[in-house]
Length: 118
Image 1 (tube, helix red, strand yellow):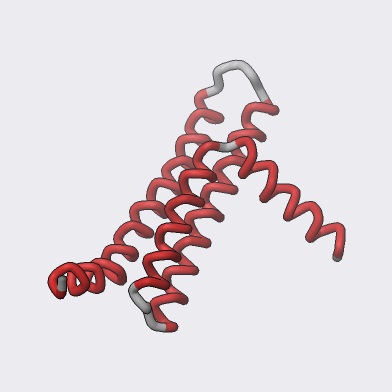
Image 2: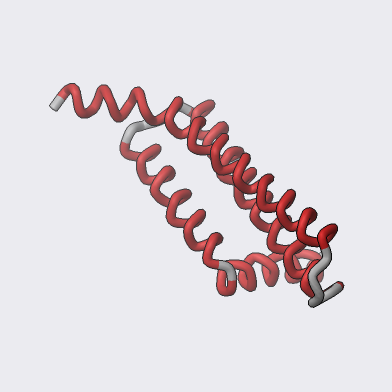
């Protein structure tokens, strides 16, 4: 069990160190968390935001894993590997768009109220 956690945390660290998109998603997640704290979101809103952030990271990890596996299987051009990589990248795109919509739905009205009150 300890080994499983070690391997998982190693994966977290390797991806964060080597993949630019993890840094971009981390910055976005930190921004959303800061805004949630500042705008006093409800418990349910927090749950939705955390699930959405987790969904984006999970999709990005799966995408990175598939990218590395595809690169290991063959360095030659293969249309099936290309398609698999594109499908994985599309899953990250869909997750990121969904996260942006969730963020706008939860944080947007609160931000609007804040700026109107100024």
